[in-house]
Image 1 (tube, each protein chain N blue to C red):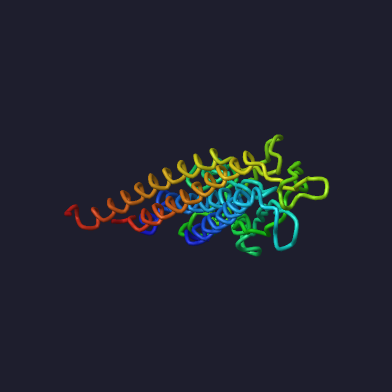
Image 2 (tube, chains in turn blue, green; image 1 turned 135 degrees about the horizontal axis):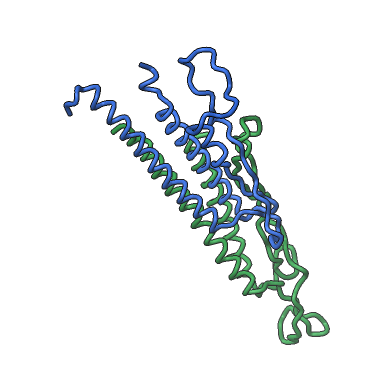
Length: 134
Length: 140
């Protein structure tokens, strides 16, 4: 039962939403500090964390003592990368306005997509729970 | 962290850029001011920014999130610009007037980058609002 409501996919989608919100916060930080000398732009390494959240079983998964325990992959404390400034950045600031704006929009787009996916999934459950009637 | 933290961060960015805009306005308005309360010509000002983590003791993410604050408004020029103008009331004995060291081009470029940075922060506020609304729609 729990495995159906809180399966890997629903959990995964939820964690991806969480990660997207966190990346959104980091983009806000980067853009707010676009003119702070010495500030390093910060991003979440999505490649790394997504495979952990929704992806393939790892080669050495952590031991779960009970099959009802939720997946161990966590999006609560993802790895954060600081970008190096370009050599010609006079003030040592590595925020590039265009890149951050693109990241802002791409991230928001993914958030919208994933939240729609989660909505669909909940709608399916609702449909099933009401015996196929609307 | 939540979306309100994000709004606070963007808000700090907007506020900081506005202060910078005010210093540019002050510099442009006083480009030829030769008398000030401190005596001597107007000195060019620049806002100095500093990033400030919203939470120093939280998770790695909480420490990575940082507001921007105006550390101070400091004098940023290399002395005055000396012009020979014996008819000016503030000319010295040799007929030289010291004007503020303000480069109009420099200030205009500063004005433009300030305005772009302000827009970028306003854009984040807009996107944050949209994301929050999307979250409310989940399951509708």
